[in-house]
Amino acid sequence: MARTPTQPGKAATSAARAKKSVDPAKGDQAAPAASKAGAPTAAKPGRQRPFQRYRQRFNSRVGRPTVSYYWIIGTTVALTLIGRMTVLSASTAETISQGKDPYDLFIKESGFAALGLLLMFVLSCMPATFWKKAAPFLFLLAVVLLVLIFTPLGVNVNGNLNWLAFGPLQFQPSEAAKLALAVWMGAVLAAKGRLVREFWHVIVPVGVGAAIILGLILLGHDLGTAVIIGMMVLAGLMFAGVRWWTLALAVAAGGAVAIISNLTSENRTGRFASWLGDCSQPGACDQYLNGAYALASGGWFGVGLGQSRQKWNWIPEAHNDFIFAIIGEEFGLMGTIIIVGLYAVLAFSIFRVINTRNDTFSRIVCGMILTWIIGQAAVNIAVVVGLLPVIGVPLPLISYGGTALIMVLAAVGVVLSFSRTEPERTTKPR
Image 1: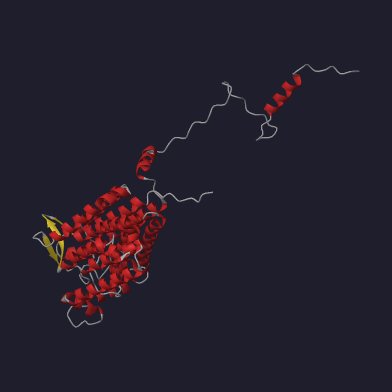
Image 2 (image 1 turned 90 degrees about the horizontal axis):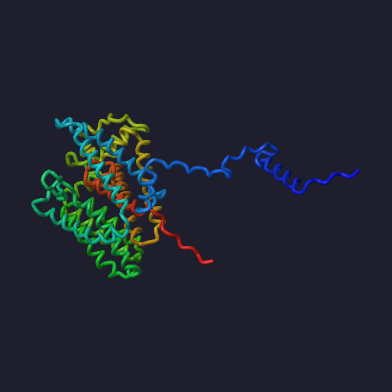
């Protein structure tokens, strides 16, 4: 008996319904019912985080922060906070013995730290073109401020004429000169290009400008700052790519100036003699010996925060040049290793910025600032542990000193301005 043929189109309709009822993700299970409006509606976009739009708009103008940016900020803030805590601990004993408010120096230093961090953020938003245009004005301002030291506005502190006083406000022009010299040398050497391979293009105007800054600082008898600036100049020449014999001549000239400055000052000669072991003069070796006692008594983990014994007027300037000895006594060897580790991370992060930049200007400026911060930290620690004679340089971001703290934070802000956006990489043509 023959089968009755199916109606036209019925088989196709049944197959389509069966296909719709099978969900590919769930196998033979029935698919959920379609929405009444026909086609399914699109998913709603996720809600943005608070201030995300403003942050994106801000980053589109000043540049998106890189990984090095956050590492630099993290280590800088950590060292600044540790420094303020240690200054509070190291300064209270001396201020109490003088009948002053034990929190006076800490409150002042905290205000300087807040101002410096704000300045660091503002400067980190500046483009590289701003620094190139501002370089000659910064250099001229630094020279004018250094000259003003030799007027009645200058203030002599511990034999060094390196302070300016405008009423109750006092600051060190030499600290500002470090940043000005770094930006100015970067702009000049970058503009010369390959001409830096020629000797006279290095001497004029870079050599003359650096000699003016160093000469004014040495006339104020501040050999420690002059040594740090000399190291910065050598680093700037090296990152600019000058010839090796030019660097050798610069090193020889700097060494000769340092020797002459040391021999012509009775105070520096006495410090050098005490470093070599001559303790015949009363109090000549107090800083070295008491600094060594502080480090030795700290042991592995220290005697505890605020429990230092050497800070009770045994170490002169315990909250300034020899604050690393107080850290070693109160936090022990582990504390000093953490401090050195933070400086190492900061150095690596700045060097990563240098290594990823394609323009000579930013490489020179960041290289000189790197030498300033890390080189000065190395010199200060070497003095405390007895590897170098006392030359009077503070520990960056940690020692007491408003001008030094603000200018170091400003220099970090300049580095951050170069680390906001990775440079465009050159691609090989296919």
